[in-house]
Length: 260
Figure 1 (cartoon, helix red, strand yellow):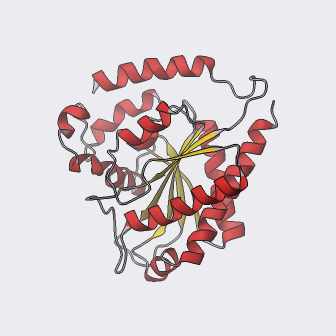
Figure 2: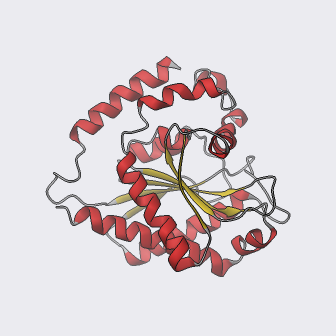
């Protein structure tokens, strides 16, 4: 684990030493990476009629289309645009490689209680109590499906609380900006899209921990709730959800660039 944490922490400090959006003249939000969760042999969670990987991809493709149609100055990169299985490691690596300004990961939730529904947007944090830890374990457990995961992730065990301790080294790096974007997304869901917002939450999610830019993971709803699963599979509702995320992204971009 030290072999991953120390080099990454050093690299992140170097990035942070030159990353100050409020002090860079002419700063622009010019690149965004959209990450549809799961894919391929990893279906994610599922409801009675659908799989998380398919719901996440459909909304991600709509979000990509809307950004491209309305913001030709923004480059959109997708971690996948089909039913492929990019590793958990490769998703933030792509964002780092293209020097993205934002990383948005899209997922659908599940819980044993079918009465629970609503949206949640996660930022990187170490508040892993209760449901937050359950989400972290579920989303990070995709690691176990990868070849040579023991070597690749240097012994990280997504089911062990002890493995999450070192996440605190980098959890605050881009937290303020991430929380702002997450808040804008949940505000759009609640006030414009008409969905129940369960708020902004923090959890130790690998895909956010390794991204060297403001990052959020959006749980667009619960596939374990029959009505919400039906809504999430409606193409029109998928456009509404993607539009809400787009408006949050647009407002975030305008806020940040107005500081120039």
